[in-house]
Length: 381
Image (cartoon, rainbow, N blue to C red; front, side, top):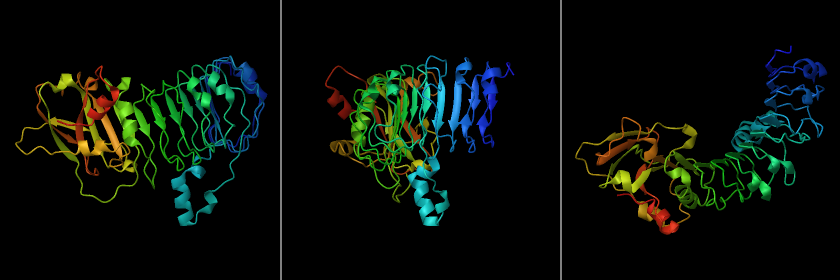
């Protein structure tokens, strides 16, 4: 067994992980015990697994306690998933469907697992559905200087620890379906992706202006819209990701019935490829329908250019006219066969299930006032 690298026991009826695993599987790199619902004890000494990099303990409902020293804090573990995995119970949409359908058997009592000290070189940590309330998020998380992914979905806290901003390497934070979450503040400046879907108590996002690498924000709620979407959009467009990255912002709700408008034609100004950084596409697309392929092509017809209403949209900083905003940087297009600075008119298409499509150009960064730049970011030519 010393040659075994991966041990996957997903969904089995195993009740105990014996000590022999730690004694003989010394070269184990990945251990997966996901959805082992009968698992009660782990007797193997993880300190013997010197090469272990991935450990998955999701959905182990009867595993309620792990010793503080369960892991060697100096071990090489990089990815850890540790939770009772009550995601489907905590999801607001599933809960509502269950109530309406009389499927109350879906409900289970959340179980809290005693969390051990985390290995300091972790890059990915998932604590989904672990019944974590205020003060229950382990304080030593902020000592994980290599942490890039933190998944805290389906927990009970109302706010994140104030020292979370110390996670200088964090790229992705997911707090979706945390129904009691009231505010998001003091996020790490390194964050690139923020997921906060189905957080029914979260009325608005905090100041994200310090998150210069942020390129994706999703705060979708099925029944109501997140306030402050325009302010978040301005923060995104002032960041470092604007030059060469795709970006997206979703803060919508179920779309009202409107005539479909899945295409838009944009007249390009002279020298557009130097004066602007990319295209901004906004729509009332129903995000539950999934992503759409963006088709951009040169428009050679003589039809009148459709005029958008960006100035009116930009007057109200708390406007909630659009559900989904996508940004396509010129930097991501320059090495494609499509790129041609000689174009002066382009048409855009997102698909059949798109409402109220609008397209604009985002000005290139300048040394002037950032607020003026952000205001111009939603003007189209």
